[in-house]
Length: 93
Image 1 (cartoon, rainbow, N blue to C red):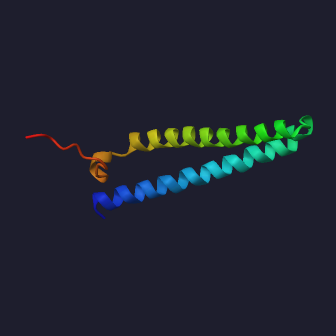
Image 2 (cartoon, rainbow, N blue to C red):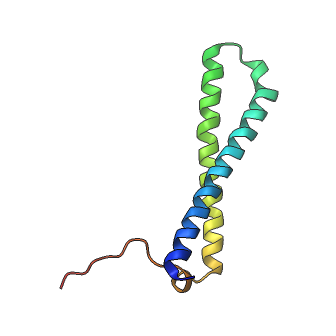
């Protein structure tokens, strides 16, 4: 495989990984909220804001996990050897 194919496959895999981790954190935080905290809140407004916080929290947690794993992978792999740049800077003559 060439560098462009490697880059496209890496971006595709990283996107799928990020979506899956977001959904896993969403289900995990939702499960914890429903089982342990939902009994303390009785108003619909509090329940609504709880789920909004869960949604934002799952996106935030998946973002930090993605950044941590990406930094770990980039330390171990020489990206110039295997990946092609996505955006190339056009130099003026």
